[in-house]
Image 1 (tube, rainbow, N blue to C red):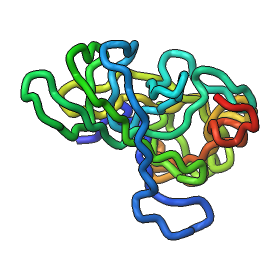
Image 2 (tube, rainbow, N blue to C red):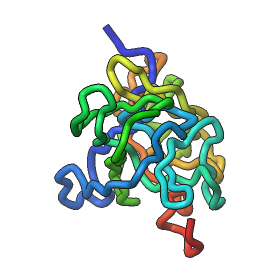
Image 3 (tube, rainbow, N blue to C red):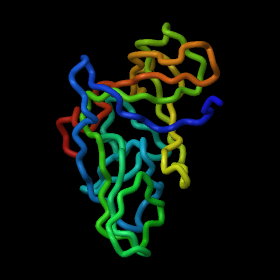
Image 4 (cartoon, rainbow, N blue to C red):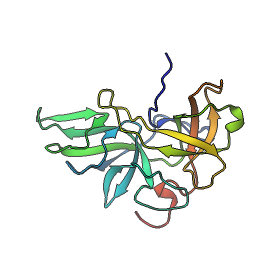
Amino acid sequence: MAITTGYGLKPVQLLGGKAFSGGTIREFAVTAGNNTYAFGQGALITIASGVAKVVGAAAPAAGTLSTNTPVGVLVGLRFNDPTLKQQQHSQYLPADSTGYTNIYAKVVDDPEVLFQVRVDAALTYTSVGLNVNFVYSAADSVTGVSKSYCTGAATTATFPFRIVDVLSGDGSTYTDVIVKYNWQTHAYHFPTGQ
């Protein structure tokens, strides 16, 4: 049975065929009980005042440094659980994380990582080189995976990702593609601090 929803961004490779071992994972602090969106594996992460946040409803725009400019993609979390009173490792953190302590988001922050993502359109190999926009969709609280996806394959310069490969270009309703960050989409591409 085909998956018909998004699954966020999955880090899969480095641009240019460089060796990839899962990427360097950097940990960023998360403020307990102060999150608009739940954290789910595959979510885009931004930094605001030194604290990790999920890039939500407003998609990041290439060429614009904003509160939604991503620093990377979430691959997991660690925190002290309020019920178990011990450190846990998870791929999900609810938006209302009141009671959780020592929360850290594990983020693949290399701007040259390529990601697998679902696009909500039937694409073929002629789509390689087009840009796609990012659509936030809440993380699944059961699987812990983001349901975000990409949309709108076009030449639009402000879209945050570029298609570099099409994995399932068979004309089906949903297409899996490999994307890279467009220039000045990732926070590390800007000379101004965040």
